[in-house]
Image (cartoon, rainbow, N blue to C red; front, side):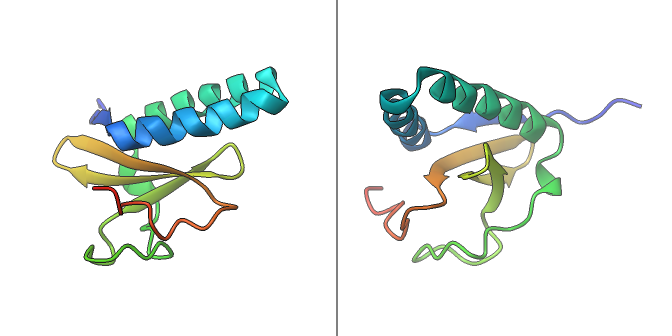
Length: 109
């Protein structure tokens, strides 16, 4: 039995968010920043096989987006990827630091 594989697409905004988190961590510890990137790669791989295993991100209040739309995947202890599943694709739209206020994550779109 072969497992269905999803194509994982990282939005430009999510890529910038990940870069920002990595740059911040690298000011403190290069190995920690590298670990964040390594954990994110594992997360992308997991999402490519099992995106429906992750819960809906109903704890994230995004104006004009209905509840039970985005799912979340926590990685590296305090980072959260917000993503949508559409057919055979997984769209990662945001990478959040769970310790920060994120009420304006989609404001620039």
